[in-house]
Length: 158
Image (cartoon, rainbow, N blue to C red; front, top):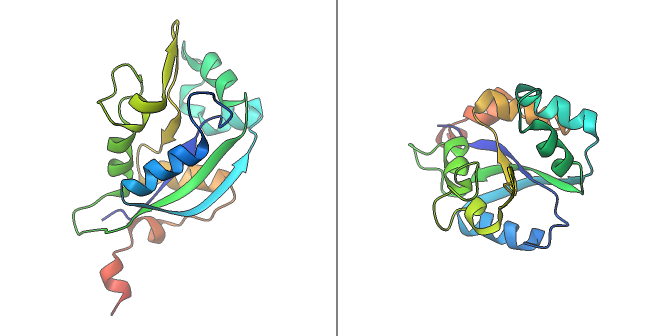
């Protein structure tokens, strides 16, 4: 069971949504926001955060968008956390496809993302695996440890 993940809500000064709308959406989908911090990322911060995308055709546009206003970094956990639940994959399912126009209806990206020309603004980021969640959380100064990510809450009660 993977109990925690990292999420990033991209520039919150977007006319298409308010941060409060996104926070409500997150909580409605049974996630708990354990930590949240607002920051404005510099271009070098974005290069480190999205290191796997540097040099790709869409990267410079994504970097400019991510640097265009404050972002909210969060540690999320699943409220009910049943045995089979995985916070990383559940969050990615709730996000929807990277391209907001291809995202399933009622996902975060389909509701609040947009596409202008070849550039899409997909409103939020989700770690693609537990190791990425740990790395990304550490960039925000949170020591999200392997134990925190993989911890089985049932064991904590014994």
